[in-house]
Length: 231
Length: 84
Image (cartoon, rainbow over all chains, first blue to last red; front, side, top):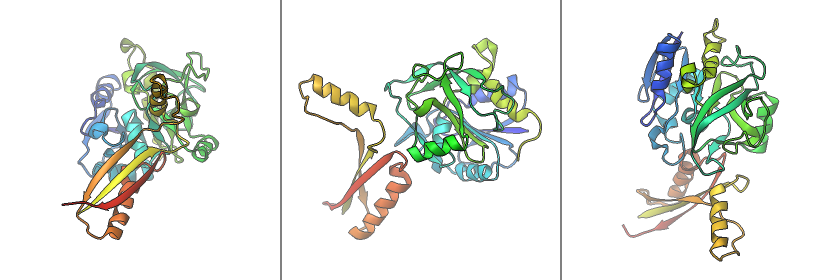
């Protein structure tokens, strides 16, 4: 199983993902530059955090038109697993692979700190090895992470079980205080209807070794590494 | 030459904390009469197209595809003749 880590001009978390794949999980991986037009040979695609194309206009708005995105959309439509973290989540929303949008934090401040997120769904390829309601300690680092969607979209996310992670207290309570950015219903991560595309604001790649404060993020990679791909 | 003046703002239903902060700053400054404030973007495009009707169609498509995100934003624009 080979992981593809996308790089747009302005991406900054690609080396952290590469380190986790190379040194921690010791799996096959490769970088994919945004000008490439094929993702052939890769089994899972990662859209890392950063400021792709400077986040000009809106976060992810220009990145979705990068040449590689056509291949990413095709890969996702064919059921291939795609995970976007932070800026990657914003790009997936702008590309229409995930519903809703990420807006300026309600505090108007950049938030860079540890948060806890509760796993709401285990029926995705990324979370299938997690425990029911497992709380993960993972850092966030963003200024625009307030998940927003029209009421009908939110209702659909709820009824389809597409809300995968919610900001929570360390013991798993969903409270306003645990919500770092004003996201609707404490939403920290969602998946598409096909459940193969996941977007989340926290950074699992920065929480994959106890030396760095938490290895809770590893569960998101281990789900995919455990056995055959659900394609 | 034609010029498009485009305003993009957050939809009424979307919380605008930046606008709210500016409104309360205005109240502190002695302007309590501002009942709402929304912050948006203003874009000015110079167009090679000379037919205003065609320009309008083009700019509308630009707004839908890139300049505004219809999930969270509204846009309005006008096309005017300006000196080249």
